[in-house]
Length: 199
Image (cartoon, rainbow, N blue to C red):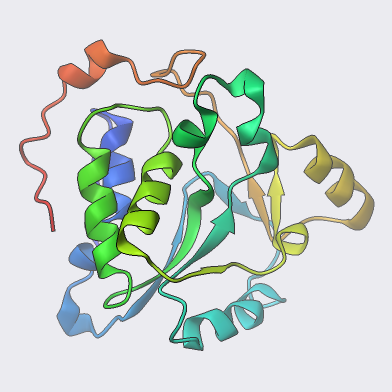
């Protein structure tokens, strides 16, 4: 897959999550994809437990989209007003996507992402898309075995006691956001989204 230029705005990188199967030509016969955010560092061999734990979700026809629920700390009042709308209920940092079954929710989510209101996270609009399309969700296996969130104090204690998770989620500062997690509107208005094709 040709590299994706995301320097103009984080909207580009978030929108490209919804375009996975348009980036992988259909003739390659890829029907299922595992998306992992770039800030997820693999600390253990995926063959150790991770791949075997994923297999039931890949094979389950009722799992149209498989992901983790959003972290508890994103719903704290200090995050900002209307925090559920901003933070959403589902985390999009790691997802099992299926070409046919995920198509409708990905299309709706992609169109929501590139239209106002601009917010600092894509999870809120993913939640809206899931609700609107009535997508059948499954949840990825055993958070406390596989994903160690650097920003989560409980995770730090848990994995400090019981050893590393398969992945370390490295949280980075978002310079384009205000303290209330809204996008910098001036920056967004200066970006050109005309080249995005809504699939």
